[in-house]
Length: 175
Image (cartoon, rainbow, N blue to C red; front, top):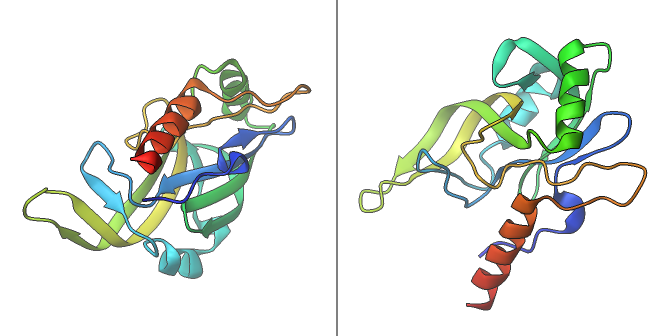
């Protein structure tokens, strides 16, 4: 069972292009049947540091869109806070798409360092990965890795994905 996700832990976008939230969630099964385990990012974050993990659009190395200001593991997953660079045309376009709700996914690019496949469930539990990049994407492999809020002058609005995830979490917690 996971700890409840506080409202501030969603990926949010401020007026100046700062985004924050979770790029990966521990204990969540993605569409490739992979599950990140707590501590999976610890070594790569120590070794690489912020500037060696690019913020990309759609995993395209030719589409850098910003910089990460903070990356860290916590009880929920890989927390990320970064800034879209307004001088980059794609970042300006992405800001408009995020605000309109046309795109809302996050995805990580990595190499598995240490993992184990459960022979019965065929789920691969990843205990250590080498994080290469974090992207804003249209279709994330991990359903819960989504932009949930776009901060505007008014109050932030939860996305339909966040609302569905919160309902599912509440149902699992009460079961």
